[in-house]
Amino acid sequence: GENVEQHPSTLSVQEGDSAVIKCTYSDSASNYFPWYKQELGKGPQLIIDIRSNVGEKKDQRIAVTLNKTAKHFSLHITETQPEDSAVYFCAATVDTGRRALTFGSGTRLQVQP
Amino acid sequence: GAGVSQSPSNKVTEKGKDVELRCDPISGHTALYWYRQSLGQGLEFLIYFQGNSAPDKSGLPSDRFSAERTGGSVSTLTIQRTQQEDSAVYLCASSPQRRAFFGQGTRLTVV
Image (cartoon, rainbow over all chains, first blue to last red; front, side, top):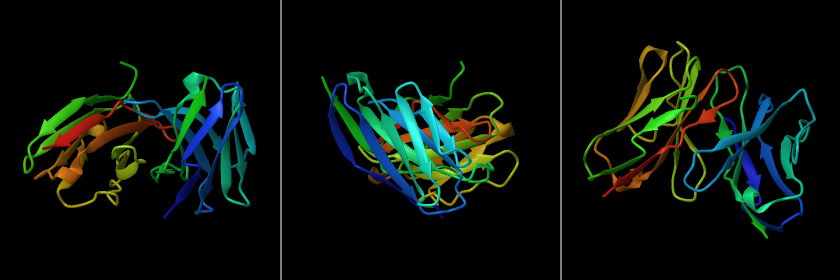
């Protein structure tokens, strides 16, 4: 089955700096890679996703890059703000709908004001 | 409501009792997932329903855990003879095909 590894487990940045979280996956058949943000006491919220036919996707201050050859993908947050502080999870699956998402272990991001 | 709804939001139960957790998915979503999240940990896959296909139960940790999805909509996760290690947040998500949307979770505490 799929295995997703995520680094770092914790990340502290100054407000306004950039943050980068990296994930690797094991199954070359995986072709859908979402990122979730989880705030304390809430369920994970989908913030951005990418399919394997695309190398990069941006949405305002958030971007995701995918290197299918190396089987890794990254989340980039620019101009970080205190409200970006949360736990971020990456995930991978095959988007035929026949397999559940496999999640990374999470990254706790702390943005210092 | 427009989102995934889970009930109860909190449940405290005595060790050895059975519990039922409910998930109301977003209308029209064919896929439904259950995950478990222990304190400060990641998301552990439990079970996955997709349309009329047989569910993927490969993540259920023991035969005390079971889930069903009636009429392709509401799902119930049942834990029999609860143990203290079952204490966690149980998260449900639904998806039209690919993008999965999570509910707020049920926090289960076994005392």
